[in-house]
Image (cartoon, rainbow, N blue to C red; front, side, top):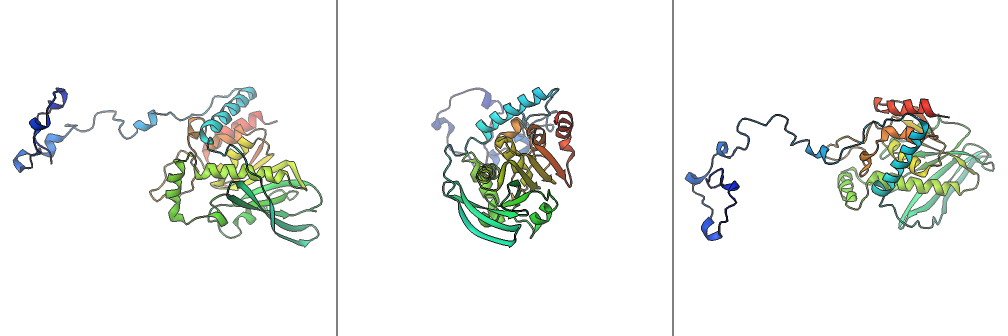
Length: 320
């Protein structure tokens, strides 16, 4: 309840003691009506920015103006530096030993089989990677790291990867929050909110896991460390692109139905794909990364949003 008072009383800077103010008067005759309490008597003022003012606090990056390969390389370095300092600053400062273990191995023929390794991504966090040999395991071959999606359909990744370069062996990996380390969908919104307080997001933790996985795989025998690519579908395309940019050593990225942008609102239940990363939109967006990861080759499959037009133009102009 609000006691009637002059509308000008808040502009007088008058000092009133508690005794002078007295107790709140709850009498009906002393209450102000909704009409008297209105701030905007004749409706909202023209050009009101109340619901969008937050966008002016920290402007997001637009489409870059790049006229040369040198300018693109310079942009790439500046974006990587910003991401390292602001988006991925919570990455562990010191890496832990991989402590690899062979969890399972099989050979279905002389030239096909698999080995499942587990390794430490960071302290107290182990992941598994399943190497599938499609060629003679005694010969060093190119490798494609296939990222599994959260709650994906059975054989979804296998169906997608079966169409990729048959000269390559495959490595299926479940990053943090996926597969054996996954969580119930109802927990996702809470995890997304809580992780931000630690300077991380689900997606940024997955980027770190993937970068560690790449380093681990390069140290294995029969893997050509200079010919490792990444294949990803839907939301994992964002993880693949950021990891490729920060790692700087991948040869190719295969993207199927990649997300159009990271600048999108989530539903109230928070069950949409968690691709947000702190501060990243100040300098880039997922749709600009295919250009920034050059000379790494990007191969698109499925539906590619119009948001990728700038990257596709840059790739066409500056690919070697």
